[in-house]
Length: 245
Picture: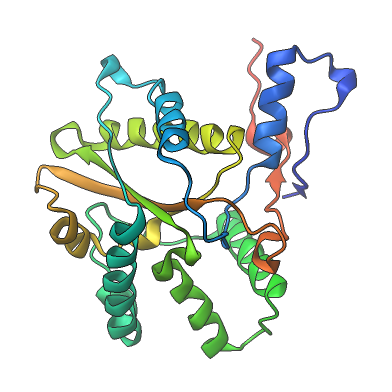
């Protein structure tokens, strides 16, 4: 299936001013994998979270809860997470303990897309095909929070099941756009959710809350090679089926 570069929709499509802003935010957003060291001011983080809080949810349940780290809180979490990841690195998938089951397999076009974005990252940072030590080292950057000054953890209520998780996913999409609108880089990380027991223990998260994912965020290091590529998207024809009769 064809993949195309992301870019704002053309002006000749007569977008409304609001749609044009949304188009630019969506086209400009990317998974940020390198950050400047300075923290984001608390007031700016609150603005980002207040925007995301307007996200839609089933029956207005708003099942998400957010933990945000700053300063020493980020450093303690980073150190513990990285130490655990290094210890478990040789155990592979058996070491993963997510609250929510990860995909059982990526096949067909889904595997193709996964491989493409993976190799976009590796090529950007100079990792050669087959260089497993280098790729493993890059994977560990997840657990260094990519050097970000902040992390966040998103949880959902266990009793709300799949739909609470879906609502939290909707929140994540809104949060990413809110961050982009404020010049904040962010990367959602399922890799953090793979260490759910550690996260429950570290932050005192009760068992009725499911760890959905984590994210690292801060101001992007725009010049870093890991931030130099953009993932691509399928065409509408690949994603949409029209029914007119």
